[in-house]
Length: 91
Image 1 (cartoon, rainbow, N blue to C red):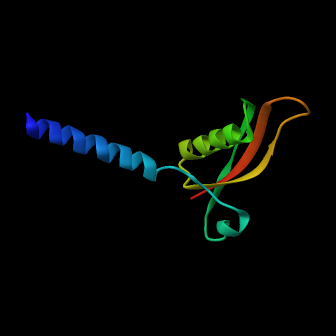
Image 2: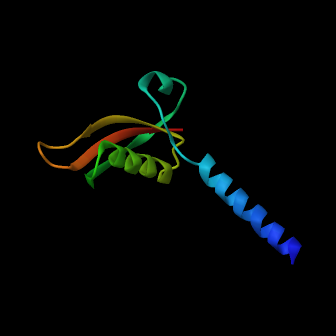
Image 3: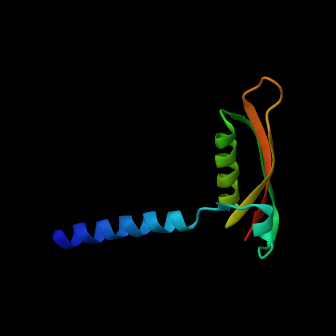
């Protein structure tokens, strides 16, 4: 029983560690020089703050297999709290 529990704990740890290594990292324009651009991702109608829109752009970048992303536009029209934005994605 101890062996099975130790194995399950080890598997859970490795799974968690592998997810954290897949996260796309936000970069600025100067940091993109040695990266290969893959395209762009966008979001619309994100309720909340700029951080919420950024998190959704990061998630979309990860889903596309990107290791890095750079936000090129983020805004909210007038008095709305619904954000939209675009990011370039890189590997």
